[in-house]
Length: 110
Image (tube, rainbow, N blue to C red; front, side):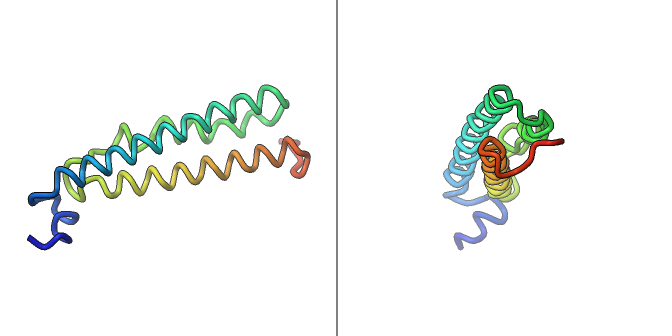
């Protein structure tokens, strides 16, 4: 069977392995995002940053694909892994903004 069809239809001999890998990637990125969220909580409490900086990451974690999307049908979890990667990058960007706010490079008037 053509390997591309394993990703499109999530069928064939390697489909289970692909789905398991994508689920693992998604869960690992969710764990990394959770660590970033905890660091953001700590930064907002220790440095009196705007509490609104934490609301968006909490919403992202509440609706994280690691626990809302299936990895065993459709595209074998490729979208689950991709969406988890996008959320992880967004969390990194928010952490960068928080670090800049701590250093005083960005005003925290909000």
